Length: 175
Image 1 (cartoon, rainbow, N blue to C red):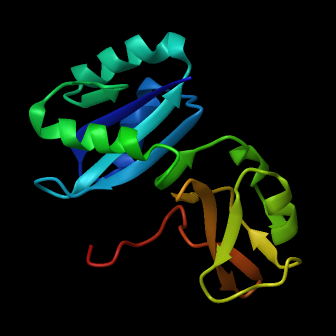
Image 2: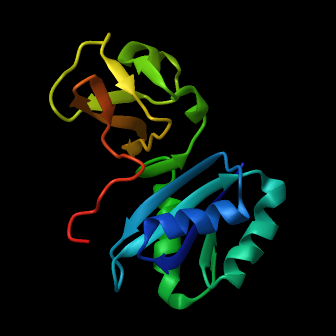
């Protein structure tokens, strides 16, 4: 597989995700990464089939992004640090937008069932430990995060059991 680090200076994470998915609709793994270079924004790492890497790189460059692959970075100088950072953080740190087994975390499952899918390495409840039989209502939207190479789904207790910490349509404070 081939991994690309991509940075086009997106402050809006959803816009970055759309840009990546327009170019690579079915990535093996797509993660977003915060970048604190010059002005805070988001970059992405995308793992894809090697046969699609050249066309994807050209499409990202055409949209003004910098692209890092292996030890080479191409594109605007102001975006190269973010592209390099995203590439370095791939499968180590970051928020997973698309990942292997994601389709198995749909609907309502117990925490044990969710773990048994193998899609995530751990489930962490932000409100304290929950029993393994707790129902997790995913609402068909999960965005686990990589921490030290482990893919972790953060959840929070709800009136029906638990829900993912990040919701699909959540309000961003201060906006």
